[in-house]
Structures are given as C-alpha cells and as structure tokens.
Length: 438
Image (cartoon, rainbow, N blue to C red):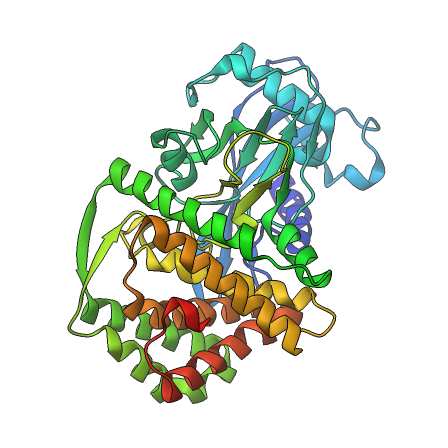
C-alpha cells in the first residue's frame, strides 16, 4: 500500500473523531492529500507543515480541510498521539501527528513563523507573540482549532477551508478592538487563509457557560443580557462604519429563506410537514426593503465572553466572525439585516434554559422571557431594529439549527425543533413580535 493510501486512511479515522469535521455521517472519503511547504527549517525536529485533505462525498461537492501535521522521529511521541507511521523521501521513517495535540509541535511551529516567516505569513504585530510560552490546544467545542499561547495570544487554525480571505481575520483587522480582540497576524498559503494570531482576553467566562450557570442556579440573567444587547448594537455600528451599508428586497430574502427551508426539510424529514406554515411566516417579508450591512452572522452566547466584574472594560467581548459553518463563504460575506444577529442571541438564550432543572417549568420559561426582553431593551437603547422581520429571522435560525444539531449533536436536535414549532404557533396566533412580549 502506498504512503498516500496509508496516510489517507489514518487521517480518515482521525477526521471522523474531530469536532471540527463537518462531514460526519455523510460517507466522507479523503481522495487527496496535498502537502504545503515546511514551516520548520530543514534538519530540525519536529518537522511541521500544513497538508490539505480533499474530502469527497457521494451526495455533494468536495471540501478541503487543513491538517496541521507534525513529523517526529519514531518512538518520541506517546502512542495515543501517533496518527500513522510513514516513510518520506526527505525525512525517512517518521511518526506523524496532529500537531495541535502535541505541545512540542506547536512550539516548533510558532517559533518558525516568528523567526523566519514564510511568504504567506503576514504580521501586523509580531512582538505580541512569544514562542517560549506554554502552548496547548483549547479543548472546547468549535468548528476550528484554537491554541492558547500563554496568557496573551491565541492561534486559531482554520480547518474547513474556502479560497480567499477568512472572514474572522478580515473583520478583526478593520474593527477598533474595543469590544473585539486585536489581530496580530494571518497565515496564508495556496490561496487559503490557514490561521490567525490574535489577542487572548483573560479574566472572562464563556457566555454560554455564564448564562447556563445562571439558569441552573435560578439567577436572573437580565442585567448581563441587557449589556450584551447594548454591545451588539455598538458592534453593528462599527461593522457599518468599516464595511458600509445597503438595502435588500424582502421578496428576495423570503425566497432565499424558503430555499433554505426546503433544503433543510430534505435533510431532516421531521421539518417537511411545516412547509405551508413556514411559507406564511416568510411571506411577511414581501413588499419590504431591508437595511443591510456586514453582520456577525452566527451570533450566540458562545461567541461572547463575559468580563469578570473586577476587570476594567466593557462587560462583554465579542468573538468569532466566520459566520454559520453550514453556509458558503460567499453567503457568509453577504450583507444581511442586523436582525439576524439579534435573532441568534434570542435563540441562544432559549437554548440556555436547557440547563435549568426543569427547562419547561414556569421559572425556566420566565427566565428566558426576562433575559430576551432585557437583551432587546439593551439593543434598542443604542440602535433601532426592524422588528417586523424578527419572526422570520427567528424561524430561519431555528431551522438552520435543526440541521446543524442533527448532523453534529443529535441529542440536542429537539431544542431547535421545538423552537420551530413554537415560532409557527406564535405566527398563527399572535401579533407582530415586540420587545416586551418575549
């Protein structure tokens, strides 16, 4: 068996276990492995490079994933770190690993990028990166891989690649960095952005963890939600200033949302029975003109960090501007109504009540209602929104979440499916949503 076949089979097994791999359950198959240039100097160990895995599906287009590969002398890795053992012309017999699992590999990569940057390494502030600090992979769930570089910086490695500029890097470079992290540098090769170095914000709590704990402990989340609404409004102003504004036909948006629903219903049959009711909700968009701009695109509690009360600065830091992972890069870069992000926050607050002892209890329902009212109040203190279109965005977001959860966390799929049903019931029985009605 050839080296390529051995490596492909090994990485195939690795991908199936990776949180960031979007092809689980779709009969994915690695059909090509393309090594890029070495980051580390010839003769040094470990040897580190990125390799592009082309993944093919029987029912859809190919996808490209980045593998950050560390090559080590045989026997120098722990057994659980070894993905495969291969023979290379320039290195001989070596053990290969996912470099993000091995601190020595990470240190070798960062040291090489700082000391002798390849052509695709564009530094904005190289002095912010210290190759000598302890490094480890962040273990939380995410669609990419984040590496902690001591207390002051992060390296985010983009996994599912699309040609062109990565949205997260593009946005962070243009924003003032008051409620978002500072960008330090971007690594690119072969027409792709492969990763970025940026500021690590310390003394913060993940927004999802923070809100879930409040729900579980039966503490009001109104004040943090109000502050988050205010900061999202500030972010929208910053994005409008950096990227401009436009408008869009409501008829066009209704058709787009209907197309997304039909694709979702094809993937998740449980959604198919709601077609008529879904079309009725989206029809409320028709005949309107929507103010549009660049938005976050995948806003939820996990995309915000709550700053400890004793720390100086805004209550929240907003992160991760790559948009919804199931959409194409072109779709994620399109201007949209800021209401999309508002809907994402409201949906996330509904998710958070799942941490309550009884998510369907009167307390849990009121906890969510209070938090959602406060969020909308905070947002509207700074920026008006087109609330007449909010219901459509809430439904569109919930439909997207059903597909995402079925593919990635099937045991959670009932949460957005329940939200789809709830939104359709509200649409049939209630008036247009207003802030105080949540």
